[in-house]
Length: 147
Image (cartoon, rainbow, N blue to C red; front, side, top):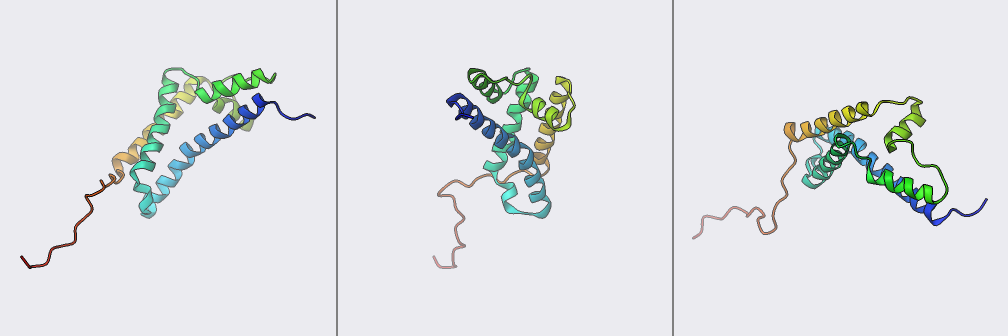
């Protein structure tokens, strides 16, 4: 058994990045929901919530536009360049099929992504994030009664 080619290593790196992205979208929501339920202050952090909302929005837009995720495309091209087989569909379809041995139609994934995106958006409506404070606009201590 030889060393993996540069194409295989890059494809594996993209696979890891893709898995981290999916984990951020899925588990990010779980963390946000738990944080909101338990009153953890970080759960209303504007930048974390915005990054999470934009991540799922990107997935929903790609699904509605019938576009493969660029990470799937890049990984497949690198695997093909290395002489390996590419994914037969999307990243999620491929791994779900491997995990649960069931092949869903593309509209099912679009529906699930859209429903999940609406769920994430609902947290913005039900419990909006804290807006970041601008530097120099920190609260001033109350002034004493002296002129």
